[in-house]
Length: 116
Image (cartoon, rainbow, N blue to C red):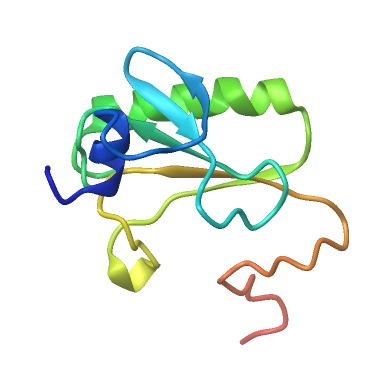
């Protein structure tokens, strides 16, 4: 996947700040972290999204879980499938977004409380 930025990072052809490197996945700092400690966990194999390959998706989630356990703070784990769901890079990636009360980061959906 020559035009995939995450494949280029995995291949060492594009720079990235690597937080953790495993045989099947890596954690990197995104270009524009939304909170301090925000990282992306990406599989080394090109998989477009979490529904394409269950084994790769599960292995990537496993690594994200390990990383989150080390951080020990409240956080969101976010991934998307499709442009309409806010996916902008079509290579599976899991956002680990540490949170703090009053951090001002709004999630892109509404809980539905108070709606009919």
